[in-house]
Each structure stands twice: as structure tokens, then as C-alpha cells.
Image 1 (cartoon, rainbow, N blue to C red):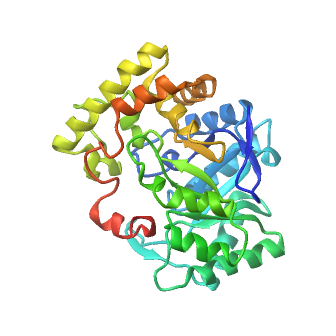
Image 2 (spheres, rainbow, N blue to C red):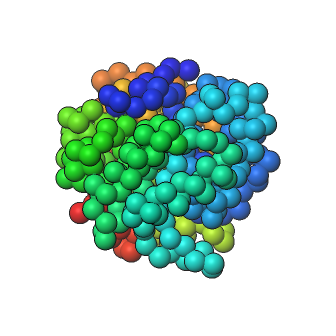
Length: 333
């Protein structure tokens, strides 16, 4: 497994990371046994970066990760655990905004350390900016936990260029976690150049656009209970038809290369720079194995041009979240 360093101050991590959200929430029912086996397979393959959130499954995803690490032959020491915090939820699973107050940072972290069964989190980040709390205060509170040894590095999530600068003025920022794929290229104009100027790495989630770019999604596929894609604009009506037509165009390029659609899409993200680490949201070992195959894919200039001709920038139909969720993204303002 090739390793990269997240930004100029972050940890060394595997060139692909594993996003574990879907193992506990937002994509419908999942199989805990298969999820643990997938984490084990990722660790055995040399994947070190594991991403979770304390609100994924209302804490269940952290417990799943704890159990997987305890039962893995690799163990906690190999893993670089990235945790998002700050989301407020109610007993029915509803959402109540985000809390970035220093007292909340300490509270959320205490619970995460307990659920994960560890004495430190490797990268800690608020999931969305709390508009009522200056980002300087939130980052400063995480920096205090770095000094205390409970956090190793500070990350950010879905913030714009100005917020990135303000945060970096307080403490070193290892990475920005943000959506980046052939379908979501909004970071290229301002956010990515700013991150590079500041020496901040990118951990890219949604590289397969929640399955749309996997090559496995079909027009007649139903979304089950608890699967947020049933409300996602990109998976709805005519938008879905247009997006799957783009996937079909990408499929032709991928087949010419002898790779799968998913591998072509992941390899494209990897081609954007050694400061970008894609997070793969695989919930099963077979999907993980397919994604890991992207590590062996090298795209030359002609192949990159063909991919971008098949899926031009801005061609995806529909926003990446519904209107309410889009309004919460500092990166989209």
C-alpha cells in the first residue's frame, strides 16, 4: 500500500481510506458482521485511514469500529482514526444543527474516546461549521486537546476558502474532508488552491457519488428505509436518468482501459494530486476489493481527457444534497 502524508503537518496514511458511515447509517440496512469483516480486510490490505462520525448511527459506528479494531490482527496502532463531531440529534433521529462551542468539543470527544475504546483520536473535526461559534474558537478548543494528547491532528469538513484560512491561523490543520468526484468538482476553483497554499491535505469523500459512479446503480433500483439517497436530488427523476447516461459514457472509457467504472472514477480522483486521499465507502468485502483495484490504475493524459469528455465538469444533474443540507455547507457559500 502506497502511503501519503496529509498536508504538511498531518499523519502518514494509506493512499486510500475507508469511510465507515454507511456501515451504520444513511444507506439503509447494513450487516454488522460483514462490516467488521470489511474493516479487517481493509486493514489487512494496508488501509490505515478509517473515517467515522460520532453521530453515525447515534454512536453505533464508533462502537462498530472499536469492535473491529479489537478483533483485528492489525489492531488499533495501525489505524489512523478520523472522527467528525458536532451534529445535534434527537431521540427520533432528527437533526438540530451543529455545536462547535469549546465545552461541546470537550463533551463530544469524551464520548468518542469511550466508545472507540482508545485514549486518542488521530484526526478530529467538526462535521459542519457552527454559524453561532467562530471557527477560531472551535479549532482552538481542539488544539487544547492536541496539547493534552487526546487528539493528534486537527481536521476540517466542508468549509470554504475563507474559513480554511481563519482556522489555519489558529493551529495547524492536517486536512480538509470534502466531497470531490467527477460529479462534484466545486472545490477546484477556490478551496483546493487555498488548501494547497496553506499546506492542508484533502480527504475526498463521495468519490463514487454515493454509488452513482460505481457502475452498479440502475434506474429501477429502489432505496430502502433509512437510505437518504431516496431524497437526494441526483437520484431523483430526470436527474437520475441524466446522471446514469454520464455513467454509461464513463463505462465505455473504463471498458477500453480494462477497468471497472468505479476504478476509473477513483483513479481519476487519485490523479488530481498526491495531497488528495479518496475515502472509499465500501460496506462489503467485494466492493472494497474492487475499489482497491484502483490503486493499480494509471491514467495517461489521453485517458484522463477521455474521462473528462465523458463526464465534463458541472455535467451532473441535481445538487449533492437537498436544499436544507446544502444551506449548512460553508463550502457552498
